[in-house]
Image (cartoon, rainbow, N blue to C red; front, side, top):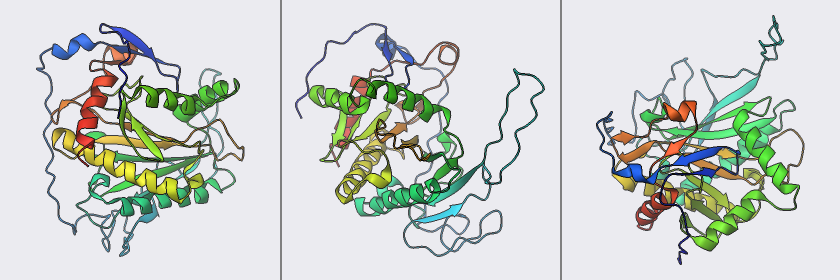
Length: 345
């Protein structure tokens, strides 16, 4: 891949996140600072293929008493301890105009990616991941077809560092009545850009492919890159080359390409520091409110917390919470390191 070196600042500067309209401070000179802060323990990565104490392994009893069936591929069930409930409720009383609350209904589901307890997306082959992609598509149609559901959020929290309570390969799907905040911000920005006659992410992808500095890996259908405005050290954005609005819209070639790229990217993450790399991953696709939303370009975000090694993580504190996000290593240097490990796939 030919990489065109861009003229980028070498000192402190800020970058605009085109998807949200928010600014990020970049401080490349801080990569030389010593670290005497918190050092994380590395998790044990050797697990059995079947764990009798795991409630997501086939045939085991879950905490609420339901039995997980003996499944051979993917398995989906309603979350036993759901954050949202499908029962309609009245809005809470408003004692003052400054105290605003709304009832929110929804459905929360768990997606087991594979019956084997010892796998992750990075350890699964592309054929198995394709079954996960198909499940995401089916669940989007199923949940999005419910008249009152306005948005379907697919995501995965991987690793205890990201709050995963079970190491079995799994993700979640939350179907909300209303559009949540982050997708709403992105939709507004994409809609405003489309008013000028283009697609924000189609045009952005062309810019990134032309330069190549932030490209991590690609195939005929999908591209993974470290976005110019990345906040997390090794954050990536996964984009289809063709303009698709949602996972169900992907044809067979696109679904195969998505599965291939997910396998290469997640296994590359694992090689970066020699551990099962923690991250939060999520898909942003068109709302399920009945409108077409042609302006929205399907994409996936990967937000990994690790910074310098398997034991040093990025914290969002201080200035990040009170001012704006800040990063030390540039998106370009992060992409270069990820390209090196992903190239080994």
